[in-house]
Length: 78
Image (tube, rainbow, N blue to C red; front, side, top):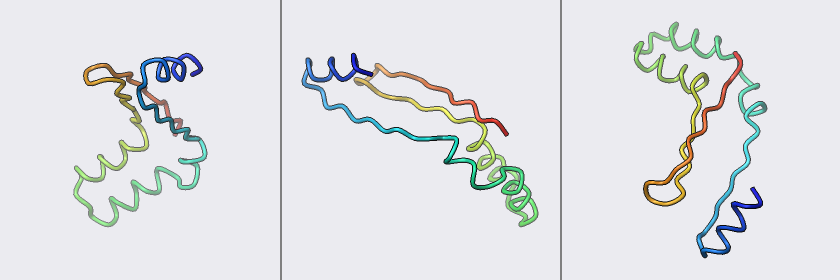
C-alpha cells in the first residue's frame, strides 16, 4: 500500500482507497434466510439467483488507468 501511495504522489495521480470489513458486512443476515424469503415471495428465479450470488461471488475491479486494472476475488464462507 505504501508503494501505491508513493507512485500516485510521484505521478500526480489521484488515489482513492476504501477499506471494507467484509466479515462484518455479511454477518448480519443468514444468507440462506434471504434466499428462502425470496423464493417464498415468488420472486422470479433469475432475480433470486442474482441476489444470492451477490453474497457468494464477490469480486472487485480496481481501475488504475484506462485499461490497467487489478482484479480481486473475495471468498465468502456460507
